[in-house]
Image 1 (tube, one colour):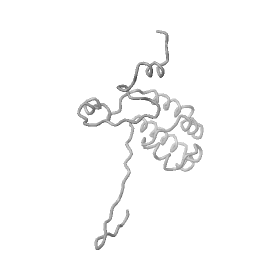
Image 2 (cartoon, rainbow, N blue to C red):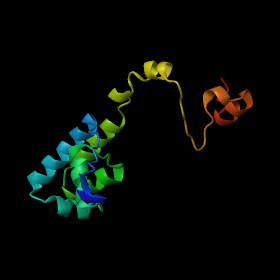
Image 3 (cartoon, rainbow, N blue to C red):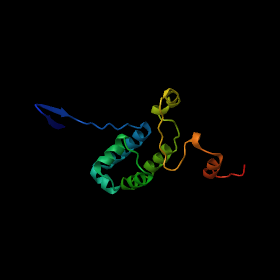
Image 4 (cartoon, rainbow, N blue to C red):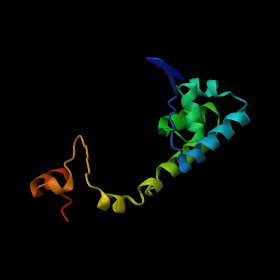
Length: 142
């Protein structure tokens, strides 16, 4: 919370950061929390063991941050989970579905007045030449 003085009036405002929860990673986080509590460890102990800050571990448990596979391996080892966290991480990481927020993207795109796109290494499809497409798509010989 911050106070700002503007002449004779004081304004008070607060900025809140809201992180979206991914249901799949929330499931992994719930398993991490279950394993951690079953082992009787506080968050800070496991956070140190997997080399992250305690708030990051909390975000993993809530499903608001996505852990790397290295985090899953380290947590599994620290909690003696017998591969359960790594197996679940692999299972969730293999899920290929369109996120809920993007399912109506085609409709939104058709209604858009302006579309801005930024890619470091890829040129948008409408601007591609056949030569460019051939250079970034490997020749499979088919």
